[in-house]
Length: 347
Image (cartoon, rainbow, N blue to C red; front, side, top):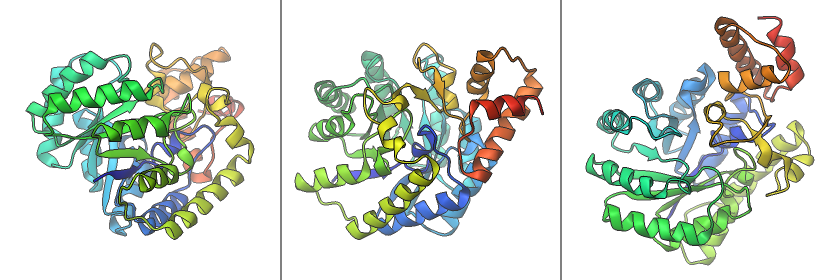
């Protein structure tokens, strides 16, 4: 059995130029549920108060069967997710330092939620280390791990070899999910290769939106798996309605040029960073363009200000980041560099 794990409301929010109002996120969640999606990551609760609130509303309205919030593999983020009532999805740091401390925090999460999922990062650059960490996660009783091609550099041969080695190491004790970025247009192909070797679930978004130029597309993966004989209980009418709504949002917010910007290899989006967690790791992520929304962090905003020779105290930088996040959520749009500079003079 193969499952599609939707990440439109979290990964999709990292797509350059995209920002959703809370009511837009709620509508997307409703349409996802009506499409038959049972598992979805809907937020990053530690990023902003709105991320916590929307998670609580989605759960309260019972729009999606298994609702996850994402966070860092640290106790603070775990507690933020738990406070919403969501299941726990965690990602490891981009530098594998103090891994034993991280494992202890993951143990804490598993005790709180047996459906906890943990994502490793940068699997292409760290393959041998990935296998070692998987063995540690197996020892503490984790039931599900996500292997994300964070930088989009994997190819089908690599994915097949990785999944095969991972399954052999884990002895089928842990379900494996893959999350493949589309920088080189191989996201769907990489996901299919992983499934052929035994991965049990795939991370997807509507229109494939996400960080840089996104990940595997929900409808494309559904259709590809259906053609391969996999049974996925999704409503095609529901998917059509979902795509129509999200498509209209994209056109209203950005226009048709979004799909030009989002094309693999040559598209401007492949050179654009949104996630604040990525901006802190310049050795991993080298993008020099930035999209500013609720997921902007201090490091990302600081990089924009530095381009224009602006330096703020830590207190003012914190105020600026919070103001940027509030505006992005309330108005449902990404902010321009000029707006960030103007706001920096007002904090």
